[in-house]
Length: 185
Image 1 (cartoon, rainbow, N blue to C red):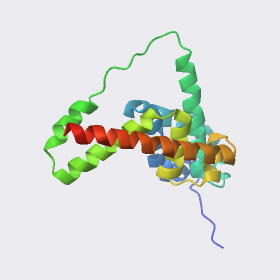
Image 2: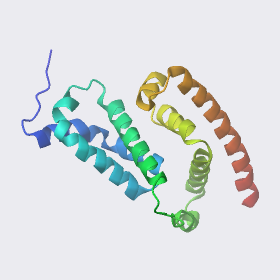
Image 3: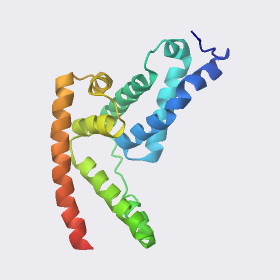
């Protein structure tokens, strides 16, 4: 049996533990926040909070799902705090449409992929966040139902129910959205 030998410095141990999961953490943070800067801030926030606890991280069996659960809980905490804040942080319209328009000159295959991706993002944003989180974790990130239940602190039955309903809503949103895109071209 081969044992992994961890570097001695806490910084190196932390980096060795967390680095394989950084892309996943950023991807999930971006999906929840819908903003790259906020996603980076969210990931940085949990990493700075977890750094002093490197010894505990080494004892976690499945670190990926555990880190996503920590990220999700922190996102929910910050979302609730911002929702209750008296300060109005109205979001300026993003440049996504302008960026999309600039890319209209790309080859037709890439254009079709961009349209499908845009429609999928719209469909995902049109469903309830609880359902969206389940679909993202299960269908996009590939977590098992049991892992999704653990990450989101839900029962397995609730995850299965939300997954079924979310897929149904997504299918409906994509069908109506595709007709709109096809008619506009």
